[in-house]
Structures are given as C-alpha cells and as structure tokens.
Image 1 (cartoon, rainbow, N blue to C red):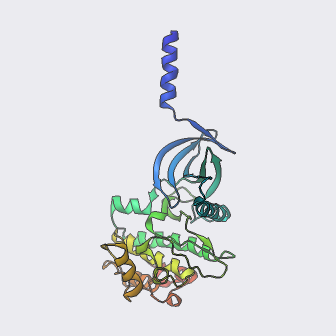
Image 2: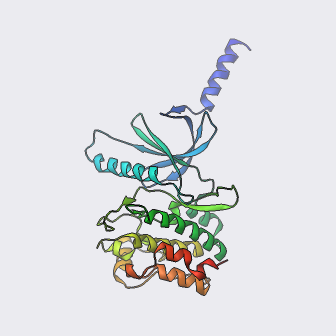
Image 3: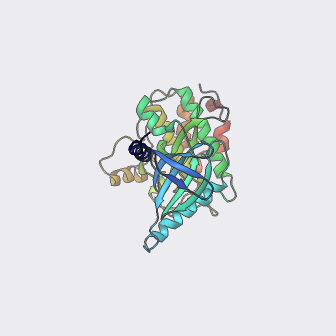
Length: 294
C-alpha cells in the first residue's frame, strides 16, 4: 500500500470509529441514543475490553453555577439509591464516572427499550401480558418499599419501565428504571411534588404529603396504559386542568372496557383516592384474581 493510501485508510478508520471514552474501570465507545431520562440523555455503549453492551446516562455538570447545587444533589441521590438496589425487577446499576465535566451513570442495557415505546409501536397488550408485566413491576416495587428505610420511586410510568430479557434469556420481562425522582423515605412522607402529572396520585398533586401508596396509584395508571396504549385520564388541554381533575374531581382514571372483572377489580383497588384504601405490594402479589390472569 502506498504512503498516500495508508494515510487515507487511517483517516477513514478515524472518521468511522467513535472515540473511546476512558473511565475509571472501563474503556467504552458511545453508540446510538436511547432517549432521555429524568436527569440526562441516555445512549448505548460498548465495553471495549469485554464486549458488553450497556446503557449510559450522560449529565453535564456546571460546577461554577450555584443553581446546579440542587441538581448535583439529585444526581448523588440517584447514584446512592441505584448502587444499593439489587433485584431482578430493577434495572442494574453498573457504576459511574466523571469525565470532562460530564457525569456518566452506567446501567444494564434493556434490549426492548421502554414499555412506552413498545406500546407506541405495537399497541395495547392482551390481558395475559398485562398480568405478566404488572407482576414484574409489583415485585420490583415490593422490593423498594421494604428497604430500610423504604425507597419511593415517585415517577412510575411506562416510559420508566424498561423491557429486557429475563435472567434465563427467554421472553421479555419488565424492570423499573430511572430513579432520578426516587427518595429514601425515613418518615414515609414527602412534601416535594415529583413525577409526571397524568400518573400522579391525588395526594401528590395536592402536595399534602405522601408515601408508598403514591407509587401504587402510579402503578395502577401503568396497568391502564398497558391495556389501552393511551395515557391515563386521556388528553388534557393544559397541565393545570390535569392537576385539577386529578386532585379535586373525586374521580379515578377510566378503566379499559376490555379488562376482565378480576383485572378491573385489581386495578381499581390500586386507584382508590384515599391512600390508606390502596393495597400494599404484598397484597397485590397474593391477589387471587391477579394470580389467575392470563
């Protein structure tokens, strides 16, 4: 090969190969975008040494901006929570690095993407799948809620439920992800509104303090999503209309007409407006009608 051709070949290789990122414990190459989480952009990456695919959340940190202090605390909160969680129904935290002013949080790669994207592409699920994925989510929630102190997710919706292969490599399972709004809750109350409005429990919208039962309400809203491929409550003209409807109307989101009596009963129990009337996770996992679905 001539010197000119050699230089051309090297130039083409440089142009076609993404630059490798050197972290504390791994060297990796950035891949395609996977979307955006609560605190930053998410993309696929490849470990150059092991060949492992994983997901990376990239967050720009402006250390000179005093307003970023609260944001930095939110990141530290997410990392602290994620690093302590180990459960088959929770997306696995793999580590983090700070490189060139950006924080990179490494997470398990879920090949199916978000439940929201699956619903958008394929439409509503049959009740057997609703049952399967609801159980996956409920097992993850039960794990969070029985930590000491309990962990509240605070932003459960289909966009924050990721689909990937189960441990045996078989059919897809559902795992809870995006803990940017989560909080360890020692007194079971919080007075900070977080999450996304259509999935918020009434007590969250009214900002009167809330606990684990707010996650149960949001979980019920995701069951509706799975059965309709639509946002719970339908469309609102503006956020204030949504907040008024959820917080003050006394209503609950309409259930899919396709649900069986057992599925409808289970979902309606999760969507009681009074938090103390909603079931805890362990009750849901033992609900006979729920067990027999599908």
